[in-house]
Amino acid sequence: MSVTVLGVPIREPVLRSGAKPGDWAFVTGPCGGSILGRHLNPVPRLAEAEALVTKFDLHSMIDVSDGLAKDLNHILEESGCGAVLVAEAIPVHPDAVALSNRTGKTPLQHALSDGEDFELVFTVDAATGAKLLADPPVPVWKIGECVAEAGLWVTEGGVQRVLPPTGWEHAL
Image (cartoon, rainbow, N blue to C red; front, side, top):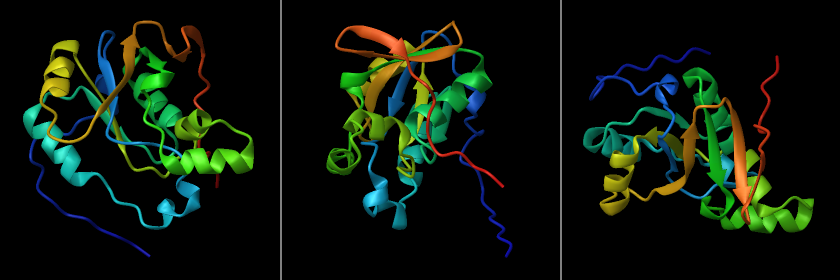
């Protein structure tokens, strides 16, 4: 099977490689637990992406298909920086809570690594981030900040730890 998609961009593309230290990291919705059925009917965040890029200067962006931690890590690797996430700020889907009762993993672990959420994770400078929070064109959650040191960390209950970029592993 072959698929070809044609379109006209509304602006230059937002790449994975534009995140900078000091940027704020955002996500467009709750993550985790999609295996309970949401993965069967994905809704790409096209309208959200259009609303964001027409109003704000996004430095980087990717959809969350492999897991929030893994996909954000793609941005960080391409951009040559790191990020510190705030566990309490990460929106967790109710399906992640339900799934955690079956798996023994915490809802946060599911939100960070399940994948197939199809939310957007993106970065903007702090001034743009403040404007975005003051007048969001779509629902967004600030989940952390980019730092100069390469890597990914999460702060939970005031304790910072390394966050492995776990998620879906593609294999052939």
